[in-house]
Length: 226
Image (cartoon, rainbow, N blue to C red; front, side, top):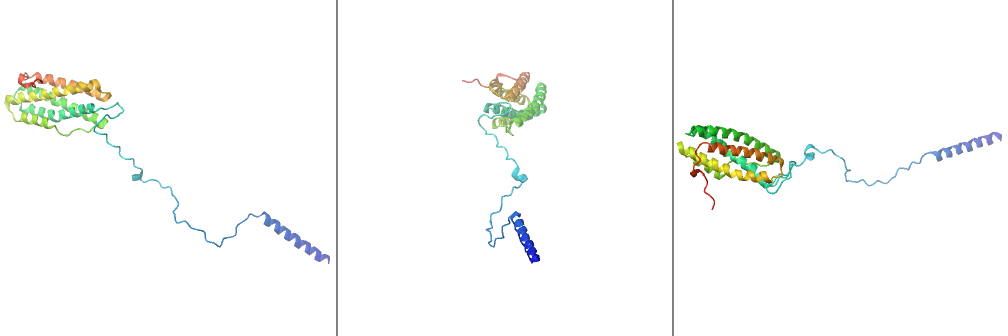
């Protein structure tokens, strides 16, 4: 009888211990028999951009008109007109001066032509460097008027060649003088202001060289304006 009571006590204690362990164990939800909805939308994944995707867009070209802002100051249409004008001068005066070094009948004309050609070579490099910094598109061929001057000079020979050469070059330099003065007095761009002084010195020197030939006759001067 005592044995049975002891066995009953052991069984009761065992059951109590099992209930105590079950109460302390973490709860785990039983597996559901229902199938959860599966989304067909792919999850967002961060992807490193490719070289083409990460490439910065090309900067827009500056407009052809108006004033551009640069780190050297505003660049006006008149400023750009001077830059283009000096480039155009080199496009025709440099080759015609080189031609005159060979074809001119007057020794003085041949001499001053060599100096003009050399100075235009330097001036053209300066204007191309300036245009690259300021993103100014330069002309690549002379104007129709300049091509006419070149054709007129080349069609002559002897003293007529010399006189025509001096006439057109001197007239062309006189035209650009006005523009240089306007830009020098109005530009707010420090690079253009410095360049205008370089251009002014070169043009003035060329005028003096042309006049030193003694061929600046009344016929070589433009007609006075009315």
